[in-house]
Length: 207
Image 1 (cartoon, rainbow, N blue to C red):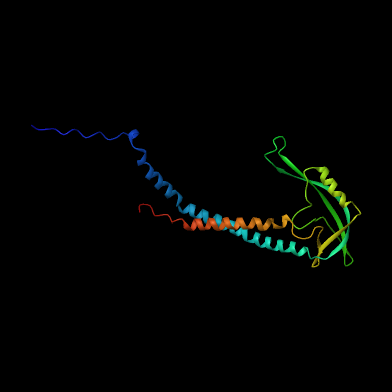
Image 2 (tube, one colour):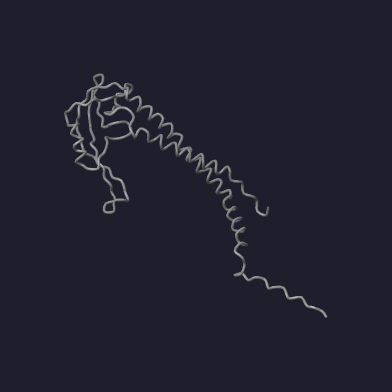
């Protein structure tokens, strides 16, 4: 007596196909997209641009920091305050819901001094930044009382360029800013170039 074998099971429908069968294709597509020559060149170009901007900024930062250190050894001369005004600068701060313009106040001092019989005028307080600022205008007004018009001030000037002078010699917080910006910018540029060079070149289609 002949026994008939059972019929083969029907092929799975599309909605019954296991999800695992789609994963390798998606991974291969993502890998191909990540290693396209356009992405590789873009990373190298972005890294090169960041590095090109970081190098001159780094050189300027080193020079600026050196100038700040040198200013502590500049000769001094007694000058006279010409005028003092309260200035304000604003920044956007999301913590302030009613008024997004966050204001800070500082006294701007204009002074004059004489070097080798020639008079100079300046408003620079220090290398890299203005006079320390305050949250309240009244605090800035109080700080400005030390620089009333006609009062004497000690001025440090560059002997090689007497027109360059400051009231507060030495390095300040702002003196470090160019250098602190250049270092992470250069590091990001090198990382992008390294990442682009590590990307395998795209394979020709059909291989």
